[in-house]
Image 1 (cartoon, helix red, strand yellow):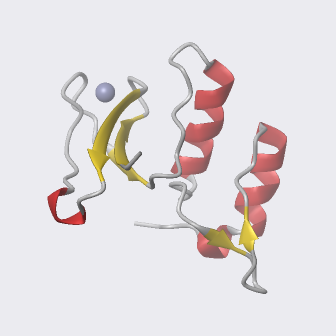
Image 2 (tube, protein in one colour; image 1 turned 90 degrees about the vertical axis):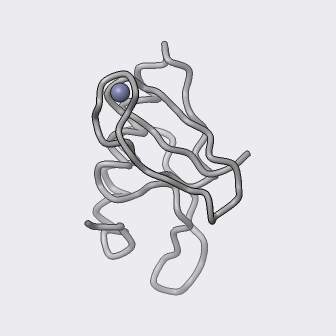
Length: 100
Ligand SMILES: [Zn+2]
């Protein structure tokens, strides 16, 4: 378990461990795309799991890098498991999205 860098292009996951001082982001060694830093809660789908990656890519590109998400009342919200749930989720919790 640990934080991860993900390349959505190659579906490549780099484990960063849990040492916050040694986190780095950077470019993917395979395709040179900028890798995305994601929370340890992210469970990478298998490379062959297209739907799983589609879902992960959708969430990550909307600013949900598997950080903790709480609703307006402060209750923890679990991440969606399907694309239709994910579409509602990103709209409803847009105020929690991490935007660069
Ligand atoms: Zn890559």
